[in-house]
Image (cartoon, rainbow, N blue to C red; front, side, top):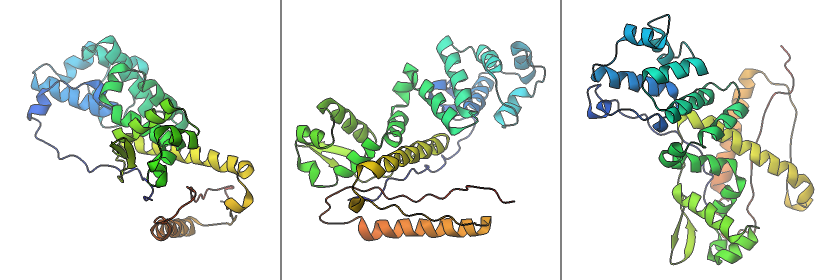
Amino acid sequence: MSSPIIPTTPEPPVLESPRSRESQIRPNVFDFLNYRDFIRQMVEYLRLQNRYSIRKFAKQVGFRSHSFVKMIVDGQRALTEATSRKIAVGFEMSKPESDFLVALVNFNDAPSLSERDAAYRKLKLFLNYQKLKRLESNQYEYFSNPGLVLLHEALGTELSNLSLDSLANRLRLSRRELESRLMILKGLGLADEKDGKWFQVESAVETSPEMRSLFARNFHQQMLNQASQALDSVPVEERSYQSVTIPLSQKTFDELNQFMTRVMREANALYSQDENPDKIYHLSLQMFPLLKIK
């Protein structure tokens, strides 16, 4: 059985010269998950085309300060829907592109992870985004659906020898649902098929910085829901729930957190290679404050 799939962030890309060929290609807003990156690259593109002047652009879109766009790119100012629309006009964006920019602003500047999740669901409705960002869409489904995590682990056991109909029956899925999930895993490089048999591929899922916290939040939320349901649905002898409530300083919390990380890694190294597993378990540790003392 494979080790847990952990979201990782890819290495930062090597920065190229502003005069590179890539800089001379008009940026496509549907390629971006960060509106500040899009605006920065769009400004650079227009400069290379000799079509951008800070003062002229500010006057054209109705900004009082000619440095407003720079402050947006630098993270010193945020966009509203109104200012997003003005920038879209200045960039000569189409209506769908303008709408996507507004949705992207809502996603990036969402004040909570739950609102960020709702904003991302709206981004996924844009057809051009679906075409260009299919990988990230699949990643979102993977970390939001514990059934996909379960299927990935099942493919690393003898269950992979079953026919699709039998496997769907064991997972309580329809044949169509199973095939859809298999294709998502294949798209993520986590599963493949040979001679009619599907098998697990061990691979880390690389996620962008804009998505990592959202994926982690969805994954843990779904697994906590599963844990809550298991209290009533799983026999006591097949589950384990242990907890302790203790006061901690920030320093002690950090030390304990590092200790828990080591425990999880050691548990995975020692027990994930069981040669004859009869169940797939989820092991997790949580630690969160209940009351602020100071």
